[in-house]
Amino acid sequence: MTALAARRRRITIAMLVVTLVVLGAIPVLGFVGARALLDSTGGRDATDDNLPVQTFPSTPTALYATVADGRLTSTTVFVLDGAGVGGSVVSVPVNADVGFADDARQSLQEVYAEGGLEALRPAVESVLRITLNLAAEADEPAVAALLSSFGPLSVTLTGQVDLGEETIGPGAVELDAAGAAALLTAVPADGAEGGEISRTGDVAALWSAVAAAIGEGDPQRAPATTTAATSAGGFAVAAVPAGIEQFVDQLAAGPVRARGLPARALAGSENPDDLDVVELDGAEALFVFASVAPGSVSGTADGLYIRLEAPAGYDAAVKRTIERLLFVGGNIVSVDTTVEPRSGTVMSVPDEINRDDAARTNEIFGDFEFVEPTTRIDGVDLTITLGTDYLEGVDA
Image 1 (cartoon, one colour):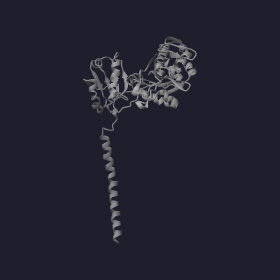
Image 2 (cartoon, one colour):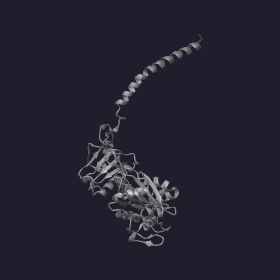
Image 3 (cartoon, rainbow, N blue to C red):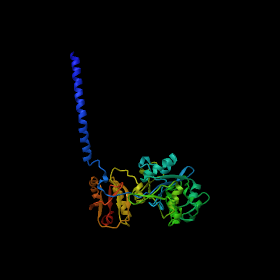
Image 4 (cartoon, rainbow, N blue to C red):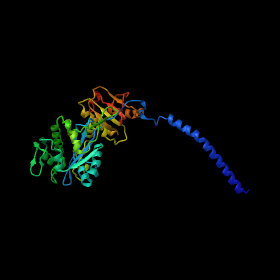
């Protein structure tokens, strides 16, 4: 046998031995790996603590955009209550900024002009930090048809509105469906002082008039299949309506709350191109939607997902708290201002791993204590029940 052949034979035998050793070790390695996974706590189900899991009520949302001559004239978000009837109507300024930078200002109106409803929907979701289940656009005749069962509407206008054949306002006016549709689709003349800013209050006032006309609602307007099931937390699960007409029918089947979102005009170095844009009050918007549609609110920061609880009468302090938590990277996904008052602030953290992060908020809340959770809320890392000691001194 040559030296080369002998060397080849030794290598072949060595490879065979190694292969046999590896094959023999596989069952042992598999057993050790399985035990490591079983013994590990890092991959365990977070609900392994046997706490009952509570989910937010299903509160479908819809974007309703009115248009005229290819221009966006109003944007409104409808939210159904958890029972599938009644709910909230929140008007959003069409000139709300979605650029979020001084040199990149862009209004919702510009977004619509460039991409239509397909571009407007994600822009509204982004600026409001919510998920929309439906989106629809309507011209003046379609708006009139949608509002035909409401009226006459008593609306208090903040300024003059040119409806084409007549100018109405400021002050109290009475509108039928056609007049309401004309108001929602009215386009200010180019260069008009205030531009879209002047219309924000009028759109909110119109929807407030619609809510007043609905009153306690007409249960006959709701379809028989409004409530489809019950969630694990005991909340009613409302099915998403098939279209905007059914959505409004279900809204009108129960009491409706209506309001607008405040904003401030952007000028000077904040708006170097002097565009007609306003900045929404982000804390106010979160306060509103985290109250009426917590299951639709999205988190955008890297911090904990937070639910705030407070007694009634402290809305301003709660909104100030939201501002502070946003500044430190928290995500506010739920707000409840109906809990019983207590003097001290307490925090509930189902997962021990999040307790250190929660404790870092002591610079905001001062003295507080942790309490053992009795439930786990799906999608919430930390529940903060604000005490009156904190709430009464929050702006001090």
